[in-house]
Image 1: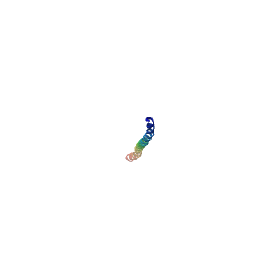
Image 2 (image 1 turned 30 degrees about the horizontal axis):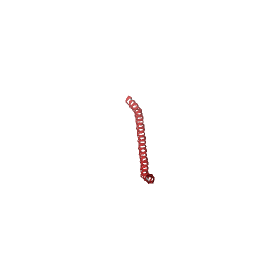
Image 3 (image 1 turned 90 degrees about the horizontal axis):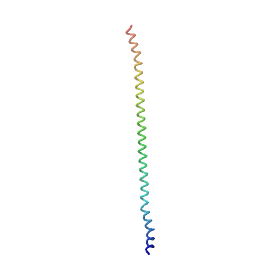
Image 4 (image 1 turned 180 degrees about the vertical axis):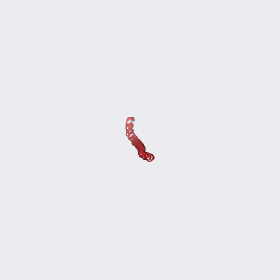
Length: 91
């Protein structure tokens, strides 16, 4: 009689065990998804930060180039004024 009772108890035990494990499995899957989503969000934020840094560096480089070009043009513009002053002083 003992083997018959164990078979009868085995089926409900397996059903109960599977019912208890299903929520844990689905919860573990959802946690993995949320972890993956947070990692993806972190990567996206890091890429956006890098892009902003690159753009800022490019703007600074362009501004420096414009300032250098403006500085080179100023002496060229001042030279004719000095030439005019020299001519007026010579006369």
